[in-house]
Structure formats: structure tokens, C-alpha cells
Length: 459
Ligand SMILES: Cc1ncc(COP(=O)(O)O)c(C=O)c1O
Image 1 (cartoon, rainbow, N blue to C red):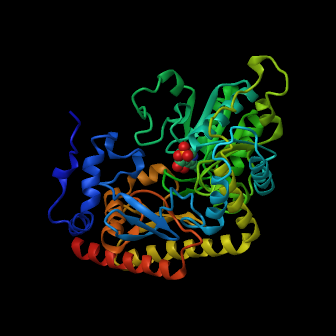
Image 2: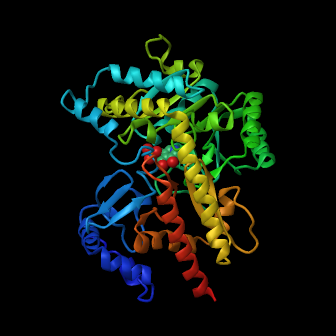
């Protein structure tokens, strides 16, 4: 017999946002209950679930997403931050339509992959060479393998609270408590090759690096932590990592699955002015379709060039993937990158300004209601953390763990239930070119409303 959802019993009758959500989403509720008979947990991405059940989407366009009850929301989750141009921009869908009549999966080297690789190489500072794959988890897995092959070492340093997708090599120290394995089924032997460092803490990170220097293949980090709290790195922290990696002979990998083409055209490496040896790209790269890449220095990527004759143990196998260089994804990516390149300053200037305004005004709304928050992020990315009385700032995931996460979830859920704003509870907010200053104003007004209710409830 299938397990029945436990959470239904936990719905508090007094919570007005929950009651509002239940009354406006009966079809989603029914679909969730039905889905559990066929899908473990009712859907297929852990982060997409929230209590009492997620709404089930029916369609999306521009800045909007609709659920199966036909409720419309302004979407700030934007396809896991991938949709920088909003949902279904014509410039992308036209290309997809053209390609749909000319072969979905070509299964051969194709001209679109060459064109996209050239655009990537011209846009991302470290991208001397490019290899495409399909998901972010695959790209980070390949980046680690390349770094190990190149350095002939095994250990990896990653950030405690950093997230690089569900590949086994990096599913270590993601959620608190970081020392406890993330999942059953992950061999401890592999975990032991991964050492954890504290984000934005130069001293302790350098210590971890020097303690492991003789076997250190790579340091991998998101230059702006996504799932770990939407926290930008200090530029000095990235510079220190660059220097230490050079000194030790370890490969510096930036996981730019979120930040690539998002913080700037050249990603976080351009935004912060620190260049890694390798970087991983995904999300925006495929223009809303599945595509990812591992890119970086020629000298390292050339290990993946199997046309160069080498003994088997000296090459690096990373080029699998039935769906790699998928024609639809390549064309969607080309259309997206071409537009971002052509309108570079207006796109990043506009969404960055909206992001800055949102972060400042959300914190001001809470502050005026006597609630202490820190809306972190950079450019068009944001997340609001509810600070405890002994907290002043959010510099790393350990700080996030200390915040009032229950109120954060309540806030995000209230945005969905009461204000028609979709912001996946506990996750990243992303602004696209489809959002306007008026949307940000509404977001702030909704926040003011929530903050007033919260503060009167607390009195
Ligand atoms: C920084 C980062 N790396 C890797 C991944 C994994 O990407 P994917 O979900 O495409 O496997 C994600 C996904 O959100 C991510 O945020």
C-alpha cells in the first residue's frame, strides 16, 4: 500500500494563509493526493515540495505562472532561476518551433552546439574550452573528475552548505548538521575525500586547504551561494582562494550554474573579477531547456579530448550523455545568449537595479514593523532571512541556520497564499526581464502587509 501524506493532519485551523491556500487550490490538493499513488512524494524534485502540498502548475508565460485551479501568480522562482527572460519569450520559442520540425535529438555533432560553444567562450572569461552536458549535477561531477585527472590527486574542498546537485561525489555537507551524511546510499569512502570549508572565512578555509594540500585536487564553490542562503562571496575571499589554489597546485572550480549569465554576462567571475580554472554552467545556458557545460582552461579540458591518443588511464572520460548538445536546447541557448550579449548593459542594469531596490525595501518594510531581517543576494537574486536578536548579518550558511526559518517559510507561503506571488518557500528569488518596477512595488506592498500582520500577532 502507498504511504499516505502525514502533513494533512498538521494543518493548523487557525492559520489564515493556510486556510486561504486550501480554499483556492482544491484541484492542486486533489492532484497531489492522486500523484502520490504514482510518484514517490507526489512530484520529482525535493525542493519543489512545501506544506501542506505544492500547487500544480498548468502553464506559464512572461512573469506569470498559473496553477491547475487557474490561480495566477507573479513568479519569482523563475524555473529554478533559469528563466532570465521570463517564461516562453518569443525569441526563444520561435527557435524551438523551427527546430522541432527539423530533428529533436540529432545524436551527432551539430552546428548549433558549435555556435553556442563560441558564444559561451566569448562571454565567460575562463571559457577557453567548452564541453556540453545536460544537467548541473552532471557538469559538477565532470568538473571534479577533470580536476582529479589533471592534478592526479583525490581530495576536494567544498563549502559547508554549498550545493552542486545530486551527484554522489559532491552530495556531502550540504544541509545542517554538515557532518551527517546527506542520504542513505552514499558510500562513506567517497565522503571522506571531501573536506568542508566555512564560506567567507578566509582564515579557517586556508587552514583546511593547507591541512589537505598534498592531496588537494580542487576547491569547488558557488561564488554566490544559492541553496545555502543566496549569499555572495566577499571578493577578498575569492581572491584568497585563487592565491591558495595557485600555491598548492589545486584546481579552482566556480560552480556558476546559478550565477552564469545571471550576475553579469560573464557570470560571477566577471562580477567579482576573479577567474577560476574551471567553471560549470547550466540553467540560463539552455534558455529554459536542459543544457549544462563544464568550461575552462584548455590545458585541463584537453584531457577530455579523446581524439588525442593517450593511454586509457591518462584521459578523462566526461563526454557521455545521450541528450548532450540537444538541438532544441542549443538553439534556445543561442537565442538567449545572443539577446543577453546584444542588450548586455540594459538587461543587467535593469534587473540588477530591481533586485537592489527589492532587497532594500523588503528589509525596510520589516524594520518599520520592528522585525529584523537581512535580504541577501546580488544583482537579480534575493532571499530574506529573519535574524535572531544576537544576529546582525548573514555571511555564510551557518548564519542562516541560526535565523528564524519558520518565519521565513511563513512569509514565503503567505506570498503564495495571500498575495499571488510565487516564491518557493525557503529558496531563491530571481527577477527576470519580464518583471517591472511595478511588480517590485507590489512585492514590497505585500511584504509590508505581511510584516504588519506579523508584528501585530507578536504584540
Ligand atoms: C549551484 C548549483 N549547482 C548545481 C546544481 C544542479 O543543477 P541541476 O539541478 O541542473 O542538476 C544546482 C541546482 O540548482 C545549483 O544551484
